[in-house]
Image (tube, rainbow, N blue to C red; front, side, top):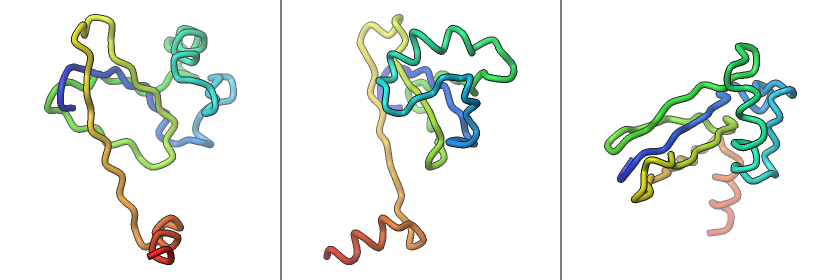
Length: 102
């Protein structure tokens, strides 16, 4: 995290790890999920995601394919900025597509 803070909700085992009742839909804007679905699932032990707040200087590992939502808490009046780094390995099909395009 470079500046400010972000609140994260993660389903690490997803896509299969997200219970259908949790209402996660990757095609919807994350704000829709946070406003409509999150209040219903956050206190249900069967549906609640893992949660954390990432602050300046923190590093958070999100496994590839893990369903996740992140937002800047309202108290962060100046906003926030995080850097995302994705790694492509030889076993990743995207690696082969990129390699064959060069």
